[in-house]
Image (cartoon, rainbow, N blue to C red; front, side, top):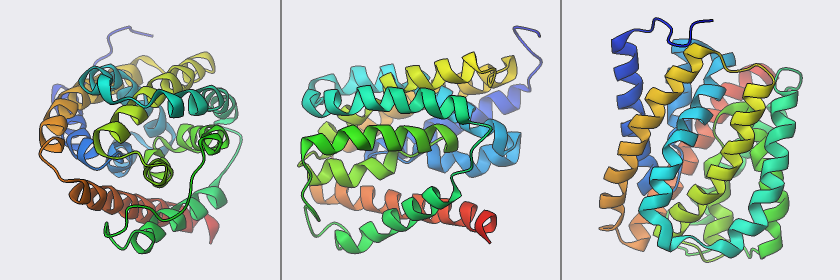
Length: 253
């Protein structure tokens, strides 16, 4: 296997621009960058390879986002979430080619779409109470589903918002959590032979673009009101839910 495979310059540039655009939007909407990439990457490389590429690209971009938002990280939530999430990611990488999780994705999609009504499109600050310990099972479950699909960040947003975490704090805390989750995901993909040289380079292109998108996104986020941020977050969750639903229904019917 060649360490530097022949890949199209235009494809590399396209993936870089895709990473920049999706992670600019992802920063101001509290996540969803991976979800926006899924349909395009499914078309370009196939569904079996898109999840490792997306998770690799997101992982490469996370140090930039952490550096940009370091002072806003909520470390209490971080420590409740990360250990269970790392265990779940390793388990999911092991089961990647063996298990189908369409029913879980179906209910996740319905939950995300329902946030439009839960928050009345940003008019409500919270829709249900969340305790810190909730983030232990959430970390385990979300990491498993995200490792299979390539993106499940939006599902965490309602729980963070209902725990009183908003705007820069939400983006920063998710970035720190996702970085350590990514260590387990990428290690699992590599150990079980799910990443080849081409996929590494595709992921690098996405990651470099996403790193630039984080910078642009922060500039926009600092100018946004809390209500506008909530509206962007809810829009991203609803769109992500629709994308998951459209992808999952054919498998269930």
